[in-house]
Length: 327
Image 1: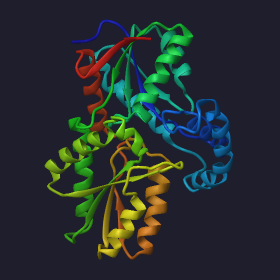
Image 2: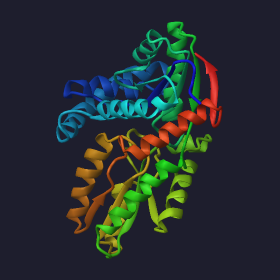
Image 3: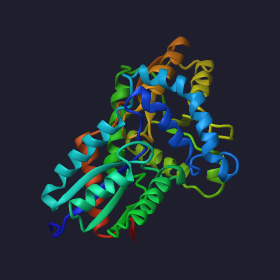
Image 4: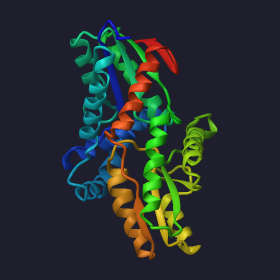
């Protein structure tokens, strides 16, 4: 049954610098967020974030230079938004926009656009399958604070996590099976790589690791191929979830493993973590250790994945797996 009113959908994502000159302000925005990393007492968060951004910018700029001079995450998320809006046309009047946490378009831009278009309600759909306070929680909190500051009272319904959404799992399983076939029957080690988090978050009850394990269990039920979970993209002087992907690569090489299939399990849009860290940095590391290295392609605007996002939206309209609130 078609919806009778116009509904706005916000695809929540991290965002990324689109040009090299954006890198430093992007890093400042990132490290200013205490829900990602707590830098001393609260009143020192931004001063310390500014120092860290200044120090890290040159190396980060060099990484972005190797993938074309900037992050493609905005373009990829816009492609996902366009595809989802198209997929939802038979179901009613939907408007789908990206909403980035640390770069443009940020919550203020996205909310103003939806208000101008006259939507009656908003569905916040995080492009993070696995809930963490540092990703989904931070993005949703920013969205609500921004709506309150702007005086936008449009009701917002949240989709908080979808670690075993069937289409998402099927897409990953199919990519893994295709990757294994590329080794032509030779034994290969599957490694799942997720963005790392401070261990303290998990100790405080964050369900991120549990959600990752749910995804892996659902994938392996389809593939019957066991893999190892590891983490990447640590930043900051705290204890992070491990083992780290480079440590895992070194350990596997020491065990005699010569073929590696890396699956970016927590990333659904290609950006610096997949295009540089996995496909360049860790590929070069593995090949230097004599290993054949293959990574599964990103989900991006895969029609089956978009169909899964559509299912999440329609379930949210029925009140399944969501939280309703007022902006």
